[in-house]
Image 1 (tube, helix red, strand yellow):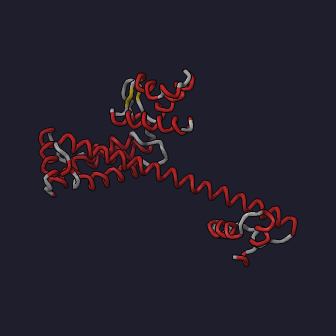
Image 2: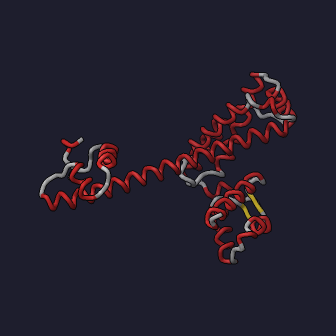
Image 3: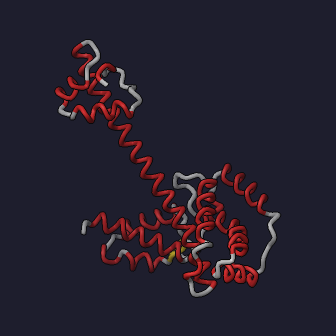
Length: 247
């Protein structure tokens, strides 16, 4: 397997392991995970720096509040204050609600959703700084809980059911971040293609001293005319050196 691909997969496994351990991992676990790649001390140092930047504690948990922006602090404060009026439940009551939810009790499932709202906010703090707003992460996590409370019947006990809900929350936030990253990459690719076509159109238009047709641009550059037209349309017909009559 390509070394770069294996490195990326190992790094992702390490992050997952840290998440399962409450956002922390030992130095020894990291070293063991990367042992087969035989990284140098400098390369391992870069791995530890990467993990710290992504809120993974090395040997001890990090304080996610330290990574929040002022705007996120303000939003979280208002959000938690709005939840402050909710009835607090003991560990025993929490377990009772989980067991009832596992049995299909709709009232218990609805109550469990409310109980988990503050926990969703705490988990969301672990995923800030990766391109998705804290508010959106919380909303995504709350949706995962709403769906998850109806799926607990397959678990053997309350602890497993709660672990399942936490995993669903984290998975939903990670998926949201991944989708956002893919969308940004797609947008960047489109922007790069628009710039490429626009530059080539301008060069040809300067030579011909007029706007050019998509067919002329395709013949000159070797780029398929259909691709040129697709990019032209996706740019909102904003490439000014292409003759709009060729749409």
